Image 1 (cartoon, rainbow, N blue to C red):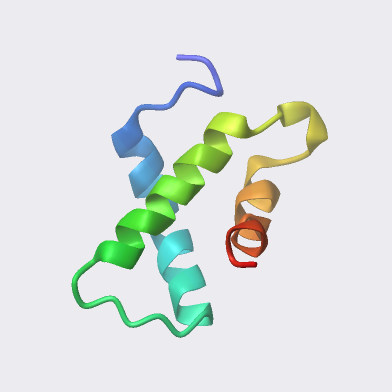
Image 2 (cartoon, rainbow, N blue to C red; image 1 turned 180 degrees about the vertical axis):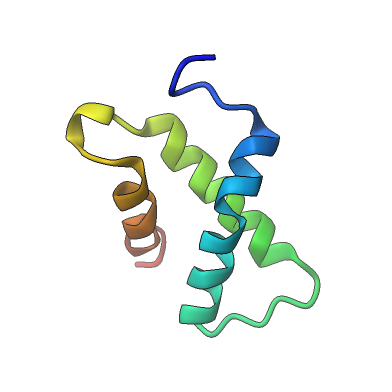
Length: 70
């Protein structure tokens, strides 16, 4: 498996805490789990568009919320 092609389950497991952190930071109450799912989709899209030549993936993903919340 190359660096960019993770399995979806691995991606979710590795980024679960990051999504919950961003939700807490934005004070999002997510009893139904919809926002968590949306957060994972947004992170997956960021991952798919990520260019390793421009910096670490974690930095890119941590800042992506600024682009999705105008």
